[in-house]
Image (tube, rainbow, N blue to C red; front, top):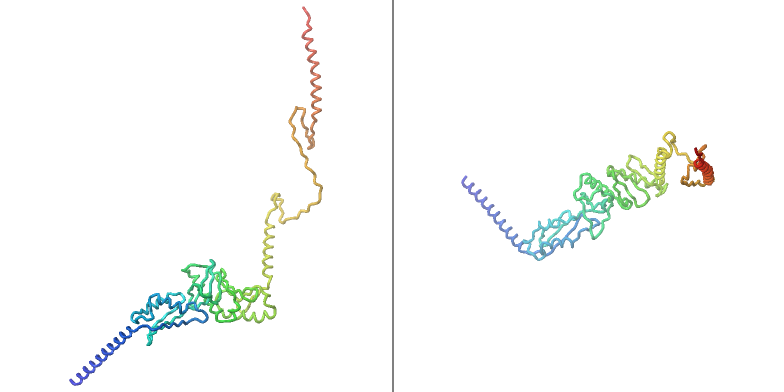
Length: 362
């Protein structure tokens, strides 16, 4: 029993010594490796099919901002710090760095993929990636992605309805990007006030009412069927508006019909307003319900009679109103009448004077 115990103790001791030796060797190897210098930098950018919003030159500038890398001791390089620095770029989705056996720094960059470009009502624009993250524009190039117009907000912190609207834009953008035909046919997608969507195609002078993002595959299949069948018979410029929101049907409106409906509605509203508007110049009892056109006959226009007011000369210059007619006495007749009365009074005055003089003496 004692021999077995000594054997176990000896075996355990050997294992402990082997472990300690291994740790010492690894530490020495790591110390030796840290003393070595970085020989090269290899950069690989993935997640990009057609766009390169960030390139090797941009990555090198970010890495060199923390100091010199090539020729520096490996032990002095903080890989975690460099990864965080590169991931601050909005176009970098993920960054990983490590050193290989040849002391070369391997940099793996995953770039964000834009799926839509959005224009706001304020005139600004930005890109959206597959995770509905807003990305700034690039001075290097412009991505060929579906264009959306009419986004309601320019704020950095969006409300819940606006965030949900961005997710809907991502869904439509992904669907259009996955099909080369729709990428070539759809010029832009307008956001309607009811948070719906309206397609503006490249070929054809019409618009397509898409509605919400539910059943996108079914809606686009109906539109594709309509393009292949109806337009072969009637032509590409026959219709003004297509509505694919309803189940198992496409509502097509020919050109001119909607405008005729609008004009008819305006005319009807105008007539209703004219019927309700009273005619001026008539009492309420004599007003009629509809305007009657007045036909004016050609009549001779009479000149208005201008009367001049005269200053009163005497009581004799009076006017007599008879049967609504004004009869004015002439001034000459008034003067003659006044002269006659004065002549008749003078003799009466002269006759009285002799009577006063001729008196009898008593």
